[in-house]
Image 1 (tube, rainbow, N blue to C red):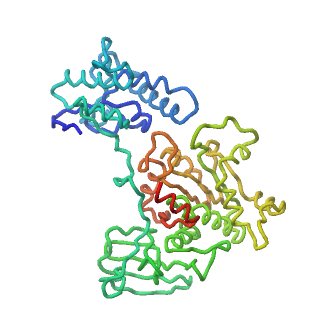
Image 2: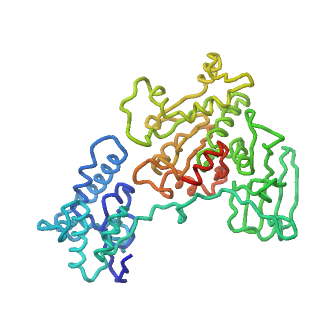
Image 3: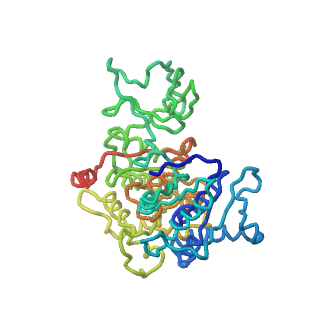
Length: 467
């Protein structure tokens, strides 16, 4: 990495992929100036056509630039446009144009090489400032380092500093040397059993600083004796509510939890006080299976919801297979393999599968809808159990448009695995799932749990570990 000289003025040269990744990147550099080279404007123009997400991002960036330059004169554009007019120390937007620009010696005339040439020339013209190239292209960062050009990745919109995992969503204590759990260390505990029948624990003392409302706690990993959800918490007091044991005493649509984290997940899915649930974890940890079981239980047995809506981003792992025939639900069918596989497992009886039974199919289809996220805008979903699968493939803006569909008596469950992102320009800590978990971290009606144990098969477990 090139060592950056500390100077009073900084000029951040933005690559095209930064703007396509986050159209609001122009406004994320506070008092520092942002430079948009002409090469970037040309690339944005090439990407603007079409209905893909990249095209929408390119059009949004173009509209933002048009608004900033709409009433500005030529001299004002040359001097720089204030990005935050209300702030006295606001940074400026500068458009960089060199009519006689030549690519660097011995390098081909490509967009990346022209961007490097523009950055190097700007650096030579502005010895009083630190010129920094910002790009998400790893290869371009390597080339910039070889040319002694200061370069950085764009990290402003990251939801987490740890890019390898999401929040745990729970805290499981390990037993101490005396065999007692560290959960109760230094705490004064008062147990109450109100009329509602739910056992609550009032804790006073020095509590852990990372506790928050809707967090799940357990006294140990293997065969825990105490599992609860944090309902209220202050630095010195907390109210914990005992969870139901879905391993042996209770079940959801005939299924039971196999470990502590699955028991946490089922409690969140069945809790009427939790409106938003996010489940993360590797493939095969039971995210979709448990969610569908909870949806069936609360829709068909408890009559709490009137319908189940299942949606996911229609993104292929490889090349597209072309246009699909049929109506909206028929077009979404190829993307709903996980839904149908888990449906078959949940409706299977001792004699075999009942999914092929016409009466069962009609009964389930009357309450279950498969919908495309592209047609959800403007809708209000009342009395609905909404399942958003593969949430890691949505951008934060897209996930917001889905969450805001919630109406009266609606529960939303987002499922995803940040290790399986198929959308360009999204990473494990900038995708919609990561943003959702971090944004709702302290909201008392939202719960999150990261599942770890793979229950699909030993082959699936080996594949996750070895590949």
